[in-house]
Image 1 (spheres, rainbow, N blue to C red):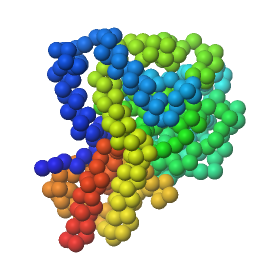
Image 2: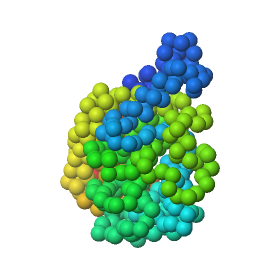
Image 3: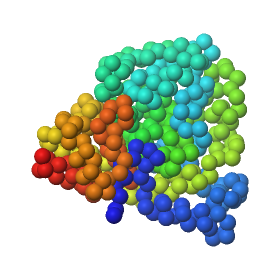
Image 4: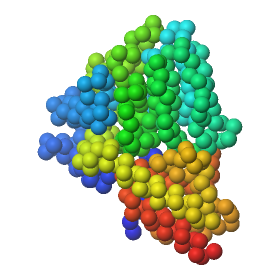
Length: 356
């Protein structure tokens, strides 16, 4: 039976990425060696790293604009502290928007480095909306936000225009929609949503914002050292980076971010239309802030839960239970999830309605 994978992460990737990655594990570039055993400084892998970094900049439309792309370990959670270490001045301060669990985690780490101003928060409503109309202090060293909130199913639709560096955690929606990425000064994202398997983190930085804090930064936490070493300051996560390259090449072949955005819009429209139409269900997030990547929804009557879960299993739908913070269901519709999988979910929702 075909599986329809709605896992929030690690998540679905294109089938061709699985196939080519598997082949590389057995025999990489016809070398007779596995990708898992070659030197990260070998000619073949250096070429992988260079192409991956270059393709990131190309797909984001940042060529010739003074940005560097680096691949690191530690997950997006390590960036929670690397960002203030590299951007918050000694005695300075930073501004944060609190829109969910991961934004809150970033705020917690920033507080170790200096004054951390939370400009707005939706915590009192269990993060079911994106705050608006807030003011960012003009004297902050940077402003940090989280573009998409995986757990709560909300997504920022408009970003502020500021005279200070704009930092964004795009872990769960990077490469999913068109934006002017040049308005961001630093973007970071764990690979395990739209880009590759767990184990690699992408950081895209406008070079001119670095080196201004007055801090002595430990080498492994210093962006400038990783940029200078071209992501080879230490042994990088070889396999996740290779799989990420394959995913980026798949996206480019598809037509880039513009092409995948149309597909993602169609998937989100299909599912949210059914959530709003079907009397058995309701959305968990504010309508205007609904995420195209993670649709959170609830049954109006919990007595139908077991029946619905059984129907989902029979249809081959996997990974739909919601996070414990929200409950209900969460359909993670990342780039590689096909439209037909969303149609299968909608069919099950309609079948439940007929069965009640």
